Length: 350
Image 1 (cartoon, helix red, strand yellow):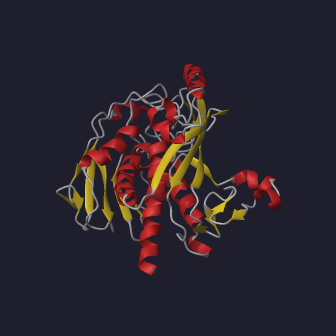
Image 2 (spheres, one colour; image 1 turned 180 degrees about the horizontal axis):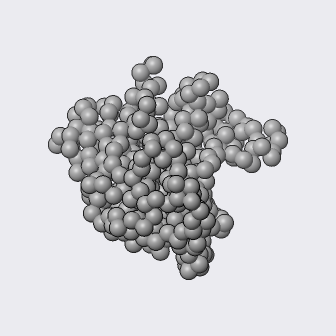
Image 3 (cartoon, helix red, strand yellow; image 1 turned 90 degrees about the horizontal axis):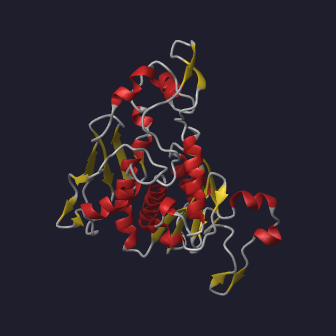
């Protein structure tokens, strides 16, 4: 298996590398008649494109999407939806000095061990730039789910150890860092500037909220909805842990506190994050993804070459200080893709 396809019915297959001609994908299984335009996909891509904000790389990419197939007169045709985003500002020369050196925290060693050959230019397929195809595919899923009354948003819950007060998650897309409140923005800005000056990077926590998800999505035992969501989010390179609902806090709680009491027609709380027994309950789905610091830092690090020789390395080039906020649209896209696939699976069974 190549691992380039996600989904059982609503499928996204992606291709491309960070320093190749471009990246793209094919969406299969999208029903016909869904309103979809390049502009709708572009809106999502614009939220993750580089060159925005102090935490972002200086690499300039318009990330302009071109729909190649599957859409006619603004609606999906039911056939494969093909799209491409061409690379415009890749500088492969930035990597020529480290082509034989493994970068700490990157996939270099693993790719050599698996394939015996690797694209050293920005990590090739392992680059975070690969996620542009996920965002485009997620935009197609969003168009499908919008017609069902399902909405998904992603906001930053924590950056560099500084937590935000979740006051306005739906307005986060209009704030720097995808912040869910105004007060935390200057604190995060100061933190990013200080760490950037030190030549270091930051991690954080992104929360994804899905509203309007009907009860009944997900399968018992091995294909639980929360398992599928965790699988989807852990498939994003920078994500190192996933929580559903109260998550880790549940392990430190008691049943009398963690159980969501039920009253006629509603729940009194949502510690379960909208999923019970692996099946959606009809409540809001709440998922958190813990994102590691960007491994490309300008501080000196110890490493080895591909022949096993001890080396030191300072990584140059253009890199983000944090995957946040550009990873937020990526994580939102993975939740959208999962929910679209699960909804179509449920429809097939009914």
